[in-house]
Length: 242
Image 1 (tube, rainbow, N blue to C red):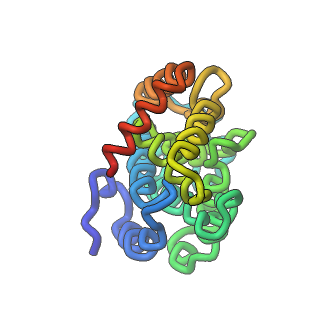
Image 2 (tube, rainbow, N blue to C red; image 1 turned 90 degrees about the horizontal axis):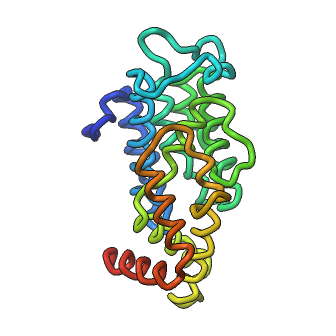
């Protein structure tokens, strides 16, 4: 039996055991979207969910308008921890089949999982699949439910060095023929587009107050104006990993 980590205790033990023994092993450690990232997204998802349920994150009826009747908030609980946990656990699983369409493949994996079908209602599975499909920062539309907003927000890392290492690793996974300098140049351009300045598309996918995320955006905006500073910082990040 899996020993729960931190706020995993909020989740049904049987669901945690299944995910950690049957889903986690399907993730590798490479290309920047491995198991370390998944566990971080789970922790952040449960943290957002807990803050919502405790009233620390204010919500309105509008936040729950697209949920079926059985998933409407109650006085005891506004969002379901099991749903948040499973969505976060599955959200990148499809990367092994199709990088560009991984959100669709991940949702399909969930909907075709016998354990999930036995433990969740069709409405719950539909909401989880929608959230998985909505998590990508590059999506033009906002998530249709609060569960999509939770996983999308949780998918935003806040540590600059981790983000640089993940982006660099992802580029080298796709283009192993590239030199380190070439991969650094690609990472710089990717991070500038995703995190720097008013037009950063990832900045628009954080749906809850998160000072650490705001600090990260400010740091990358500063680096975007000085390519040599970025090169110095990413080399520090890669050296720490070595």
